[in-house]
Length: 469
Ligand code: XIL
Image (tube, rainbow, N blue to C red; front, side, top):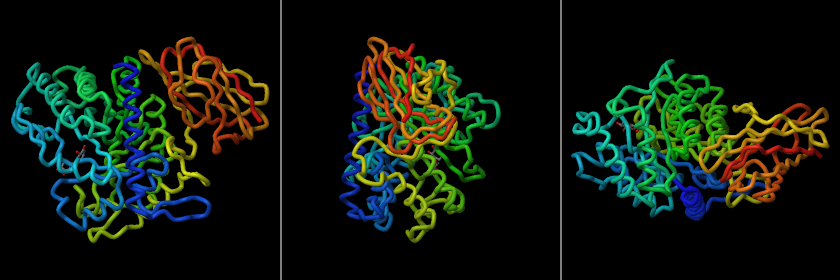
């Protein structure tokens, strides 16, 4: 795909969140003063303050439950149809498409200013019987036709698609999951992404899976390598969805933030797409949200249902509201964490502001350190694909620590910065300079912080110099 389309995609996503932010804030009318920060009192409005979404899975039949809809409209600024966009729902008979329930959810969401996640275009599960019985070329063609038809129908209405869901095996193999789709050839995933890109070039295209939360798990590593490979070869992928079902025996891992920041460092957004936690402990919810807020490219969180009684695992009471619609302690923890991302003075209107990641960098530097004049060094590592790159810059304080820092480098001819995170930028081609933002200027002696930027063209050969104040 062209850079022009990719930029358009970014704009549309940003527009959605700004619209959602405005409407959620207006609808809630619940802005209160907390210290010097303006803290919102609903989940969606709070998340929107840092450019994020906070959503929920919605089944069509709950739209006639007024107690449910009251909470939905008040608290959330994003929805994911729980089952209504799956293959068995949208193409019950081959080449006969059925969109009624999905359209109802989309209409409701849009009327409330909420964005919609499309879930899901290609999956081994919830396939209609006709697809289950297909194989080989016939199945590959049917998959592509399904993706084309469904993505075209919802074009302009969903901000992100779970293009492929759950394609990797559990356990230690790091292998693909066996399925009829996998048996059509190992390239089925990238073909699905290219097909979705052709049908809906403006939506974010995501890979979504569960049990990819623990950074050291073989499954997480396997998905990471696939995304890295896709970025390197120019397969159109924009985001990774971590379902994060901490239910059914799977727990929140202490290295979750490392997982989020490692995927983000590949140059994709990260979404937490189906969060639920057995018995909804406030601590685990707090940690999960805190980790997302610490990673600039963690753009939003979706919980998998509103009330415990709405959950696919209602026996585990894993959600933020009880069956009577009352807020649980986990709700308060989540809201507080979302509001902690609010900067102390003026709320941002565009770029997310969050605490700096505290996890170690995941990609080794490829450029030797350059000693800056005032006690810091900077190294840059690149993830490149045809026509673009993401640069991750690591700033290391010298022996006396820093109060602030400034990193300069010259971009190769033809290269240009399109956006940067965790740093202020001046210049976008030729010589560019990045300076610390409020939260990452102070680095203790010998310690590091990271910022990053995305660019078009070829980014190789940049030599950063660092100066400290
Ligand atoms: C679940 C739904 O919540 C249930 O209603 C349905 O019976 C089965 O699917 N991973 C996914 C979701 O990607 O689509 C699943 O949703 C939960 C696991």
